[in-house]
Length: 430
Image (cartoon, rainbow, N blue to C red):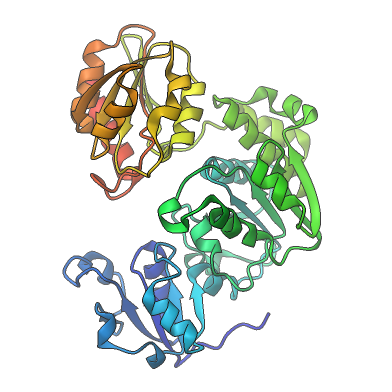
């Protein structure tokens, strides 16, 4: 794959999120003539624009320019692939690349591992990183984990193992991305506002394997029907989890939950494929404490344990969280609704959840779906939900933030929501 010549090329970066900023800075370093398009106003985007060189042009209205004014469009993951601007550019034969594609054309790692799935991506990515480092491997981690590939290029050498968390948004439109090892953890309803159907969502995930063949390895979840279906068309080696042998390997796992056993199994398969010794795998599994905002223990006060699971932005992820705990849970639910009824939570809540405390715009929907099963207390804000739970919970109880919703109605992202929960808990337990 030839490295593209970008000096003097007119490039439009579409979307000014973390990936867009990273792509724009990288393109400027390569001597491109960079413009940015975002539907938000220049005033709102000032903090992001301040991170860019002064010669970057900002465009906020599609009718102010023509797509054919550019040699290349680079797209942030948050921009839908059917955005009119992108459709127009493709019709005119102008290359349209995701940020992942731009970065991929400039890296030559020793090996690349890509992890995708609806739930468990971040934990698995970080666990693979920890195991590889314990196995004395040189590792760089990025992708959908807050570090766009274009921001990592200078750190990736010929002896580096590149580990990337990959979302379906990043996979919709890549042209050349080719990992040596790919992991597909699971697929459950999520992001259907963008993909519209589960079939289209699965098709986006399947693009991860598009260029894999021969000695490449795909690690798949035997229990997931979408993974089993994908296996029929994969043209390289396939390795499966769970297995009885992997169950023994993960017996020392520190982090709670059956879902984390599966994440650990997938991570172990990857590590073994890269030559890590079993003793290093076992050592890491017994010491790895998890990731922030995913079943994160925040505090224990008077026997009440406070758990931050803000990263649970869909119902299936919240089911997994509930399975990780016993009785007497005060569950904080709510945020931006994703279209799936909350009634599917009922079997996981019976004889386990004392109260559901609702926050955000989905509060009325949650109450409507769950009121006949459990006491639902509308709280609107996290501050009030934490305060209420702290007054009701007793020794042995758990206060669990696992919202089953996106955060954008009240917060910038799930991280900000998680930090707000931590802040409010610490005020109470100090």
